[in-house]
Length: 115
Ligand SMILES: [Zn+2]
Image 1 (cartoon, rainbow, N blue to C red):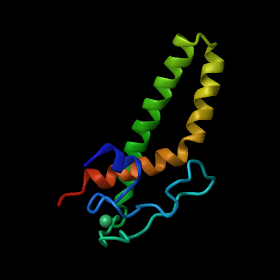
Image 2 (cartoon, rainbow, N blue to C red):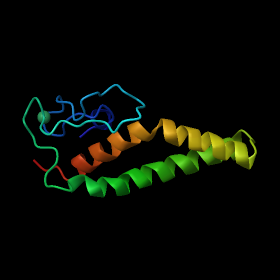
Image 3 (cartoon, rainbow, N blue to C red):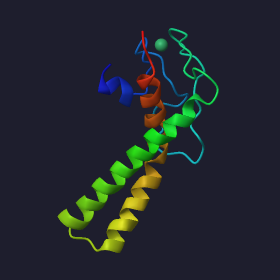
Image 4 (cartoon, rainbow, N blue to C red):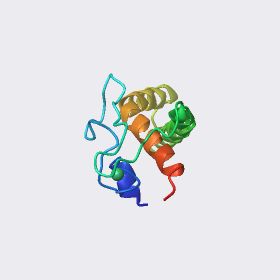
């Protein structure tokens, strides 16, 4: 398991097949569509119905980590006002939402993948 494979949203089994239909889309107003099975090795991504509900916890953790790190960077390193730092954080979180969604689900798949 490598970090690059996760960041490229590749299958945990063969590390070649894409998990999502559009892998290079950074931001979208639509929920990213997932493949049900890996196109290369046929691994089923959604192990059971409701499997990805738990990925919301991962998504929450990623968002909080981004929120705090960007806020601290803006306010304490770049000395922006609280309101400016907050608005920048909100803009980044919205723009990163598609990426966060994909990352959370990919991490969830990797968490419960065993050979
Ligand atoms: Zn695969």
